[in-house]
Structures are given as structure tokens and as C-alpha cells.
Length: 155
Image (tube, rainbow, N blue to C red; front, side, top):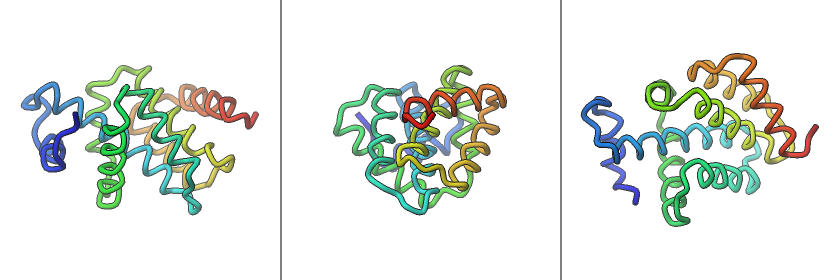
């Protein structure tokens, strides 16, 4: 179950060593959700297809119930509006996600970008920037993009 908004924000401000496993899990879930929401927001025509893809990616990644997904998405949208940097999200992911998990996040970002069958330049730039912050190599980045493009039927 997701904690209150304050608990989640507190989990970001505290050192990773002082976070309980539950707080760390929630922080990683929120960070991933914010990155996906920002890709959705980068496109000038934010639509239902992208929102559905964000929910599907979060469901696949974290196996959350529908009510938990709805609360996570709402919190991520609120957080994305006021967040001005990605370091607080990506640094935690770099510390706690494996390289395949980070590549998967980049692939999810591509899936969101391709959900409306149009790749916006802002989406492309944002995903490239975040992939760099996650220390995803160029080859891994391109592989994630190609898999997402193929899954969207855009090959």
C-alpha cells in the first residue's frame, strides 16, 4: 500500500541508508513513475494512449493493484509538475536497480513515447538525457528503443 504524500517525499529527503525497505520501494516506484509521466508530458499532445501505457508499464514493473497504480500515477503527476531535476530519482535507481532493470525503465519510457504512434523531439531528448543519467550505454539505449518501436508495431 502506498504511504501518504508526506511519507513519500520524506523518503526522498532522507539518506538511502536511513530508509526502511518499504520506503525505498515506494521511492523507487515514485521515481520510475515520475520519469514515465515526464515522457508523457514532453509530447505536446498528451493523450489517453500514453497514459494507458504509463499505467501498463508501472503494473508490469511493480505488480501493483489498480488502486495503488491510480494513487502512484496521481502522485507522480503532482511530483512531475514541481520536479526540476532527475538526479534524485536516477541516483536512487543507479544505487538499487540492476543494469537490466535500468534498461527496462528506458524501454518503458520509449513505449510511452511510441504509444501515440508519433515520436516527439522533446520525448527523444528527454529519454536520451535520462538514459545517460541511468548509465545506460548507447547500445542498450538503442536496443530498448528498437524493442519498444517493434512492440508498438512501428517497424
